[in-house]
Image (cartoon, rainbow over all chains, first blue to last red; front, side):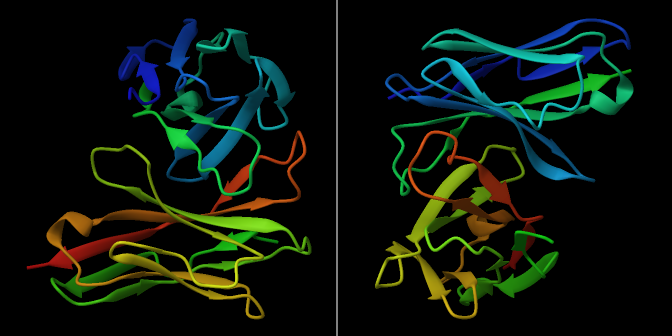
Amino acid sequence: DAGVIQSPRHEVTEMGQEVTLRCKPISGHDYLFWYRQTMMRGLELLIYFNNNVPIDDSGMPEDRFSAKMPNASFSTLKIQPSEPRDSAVYFCASQNRARSNQPQHFGDGTRLSIL
Amino acid sequence: AQKITQTQPGMFVQEKEAVTLDCTYDTSDPSYGLFWYKQPSSGEMIFLIYQGSYDQQNATEGRYSLNFQKARKSANLVISASQLGDSAMYFCAMREGTIIQGAQKLVFGQGTRLTINP
C-alpha cells in the first residue's frame, strides 16, 4: 500500500515568494495532520483535518500560513509571503479512524529553505 | 510544563547490547496513549510501538518493548540486541483524551539521538 506522499521533497526559494506544499494521505484515512520540525522547536503540530474539515489550527504560526483539504486525497499547506524563519522540514501525516491506538503515518517530509 | 520529557539528548551503545530510552509524561487525563517513533538520518518518521493508559501489559513489537510505569508516568522504550540500523533519533509522543473529535493531537518530546557503535 502506498504511504503518505508529499511533494516536493526539497524546496529552495527566495524570501517573499509563495510556497505550496502538497500531501496525499493514505487512502481511507480520516485524519490529516501538518507538522513542522526545526532544531529549536522540535516537532510542532500546525493544523489537522477530520474528513476534510479543519479541526484545530491553533498551531498555525501566523496569517501567512494557510492549509486546505479540498477532498479526501489531497491537502496543501501554503506560505505567502515566505520568510527565512519558515525554513524547516514540513511533515504531513494521516490516521485511520478516531481510535486511541491508531498511529499517525508520516510522509517523508518537505525540506524547505527560504533564502 | 512539558507534556513529554526525554532527558537523554544522546546515547551511545555497543552493537548487540540492549538500550533503554527514557520518556516521562505529564497529564491529568486518565485516558491517553503513548507512541514511539524512529527518525533515521534520511528523515522519515517511522511508527514503532503504542501503549494505552488502560493497557494491562507492556507493549511489545519485535525487538521493541515498552517499560510502562503508570504511577511514575514513564514509558521507556527498550530495544533489545541493538543493530547498526537502530542508529536514529527516537521520539516519544502522547495523545490525550477520549476518542472525540478534536482529541487526536500528538505532543512530541525533543527526542533522543541513539548511536550504535560496531
